[in-house]
Image (cartoon, rainbow, N blue to C red; front, side):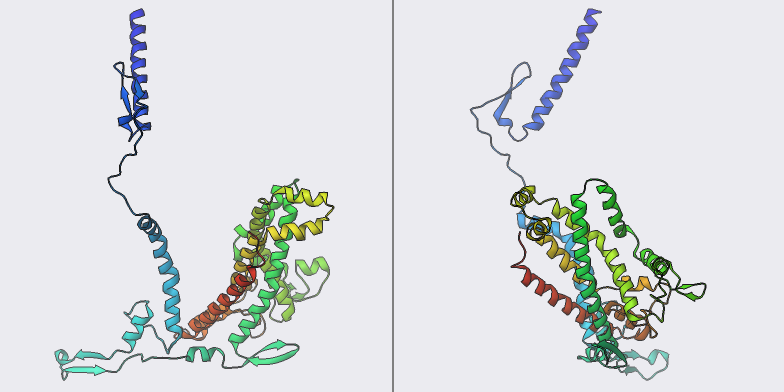
Length: 410
């Protein structure tokens, strides 16, 4: 029995020793010349020998390595950003642009094939040799698509109580500017205040964070349908129904065809603020958590009020987050489409309120309507409108960056 126990102990000790030596080899791999093994198998280091790094068999330049890592993202950016922008620029300055069968989706290929003379050998079918026909889709370059955007003044905008005749594109720009001016500052202010109070409270903090984050993970169309039901004006054919009218005892049309312009605007802005608020609250909460509490303690010792602390400490230290939210909010508001369409989800796909169906049409809504309904065979008009929108967004973003140099504290 004793012999068996001793054999087991010796076996386990050898296994343990072999694993330990294997561990040492892995740990000191590349520095084998700096240690040696004794007769009993133990490993000792030679402290007189300096450690030398193991030479690599293959050394890659760091710039080349960074380029290889960025290749997948660069390919995606080229396919889904640079290529569509270049395509839109070419189509916008091409008059009477038409997609040609077999030319693919690249605009230049369609232009070349559409302007090329077609020659066919008709002798095989009893014809008189080679017959050439004129270009099937001749095009020219110019500003005709941009001129179209500002022509046809059959619509109007209300400016200081006067109806000014204008084109539908100008009307969509005017509507978009109105929504941007109302929605962006209101959303940022409400989100900042809510984030500030959520950050300060401790009781049910997680509950309020969840409640205000729900719109961010809720489907936009579903949320718009809920708002449509809340502000509906008809119940069994009678005006004055709906949850909002019932609670406040009103008899107001909000989102119907005959609703006044201001009422439809109130619903759109309210929905947009609620829909866009969740992400902004999340960003402000992350910024508030990084502010050192010593600033607040020092201000309270000096006798500063809560409002003064908010204006002089919280807002300046949140200026990087405010700049980020402001830029992204302006870009998102100028591209507003689903917020308006969701309110009128019960109508057709091209309805934006009012008797003409364009009362609150936005620029993106105009582009979609023109490309799908008005001029489906000529995408040049929609491409020109998208270029105008891109220029406006770039100008406003550049102005924001210029102003933020003196206002943002990092």
